[in-house]
Image: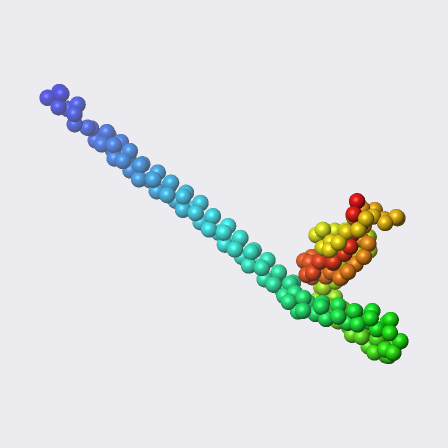
Length: 174
């Protein structure tokens, strides 16, 4: 009988065995809770990212919404400018007609400026491949450096920081 008493657990041993069995489900639940909390944090971060992207896209739509209009108006301004250049060589063109065209161009440019459309700055005289397109290059004339703008063929325009149309230029080659 003494051998049988060793095989039968005492009440204290039974409690320890039950506690060990109960610890495993508790630790499994704690691990599951930790995983769910991590998933919740990732989901919350993703929601914030989606919200920020939506705000940025909305702001860009507002900021660049008039780009289609500006792109359609720019060639009209070019045509009016060419009309002024060609009329200044002819004697018969009325000065009031030329003045009216100039005022129209100025008014259109003011309207575009209000919307954030501006001519690309070429005052420094240097070719900028980001906002300019070289349509030709000629040997470097005296007094010019390679990469200098020799002639502006067609003005370029930007809407805020986006190029709507590159400035077309002739550049001094080096």
